[in-house]
Image: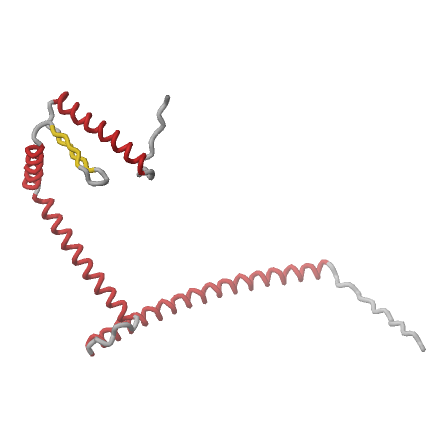
Length: 193
């Protein structure tokens, strides 16, 4: 019988999940034992079930293996102090960014006319100046867009005038080549009563 590939996601059925946990736990403990015996490696394995029950395996004293692990981690930290420095730097940057975001949000609320009751006269003057600069920038952009639209319409007008002249030329050529029809007016017949 060929095994299908198992999707790696949580098993919804509690009974099936418990059976799978039990089988896989046994297999994992067996593999840890085999690794320790075959390779003469120090192996420690700690498993907590969903309900918090502890399962463990250690090729020697588990406390000694955990202590050895902690010493290795400390050595790595001592050998690479830049990591801690970089981490601290990143924390400070995150704090500074949060402060900047808060100030920008406060500034935005003030620009929208919210929370201006607590502003001093100087802050209100700065806000007024900032709004004037923004308004000037908006008006400049608006004038630029109007100018572009006028230029576009003038170009369109020139094209239409050229098209009109071309069509007028065609009409004149047509009239020259084909003289106008003579229209006859038929007398109207009125019945006499």
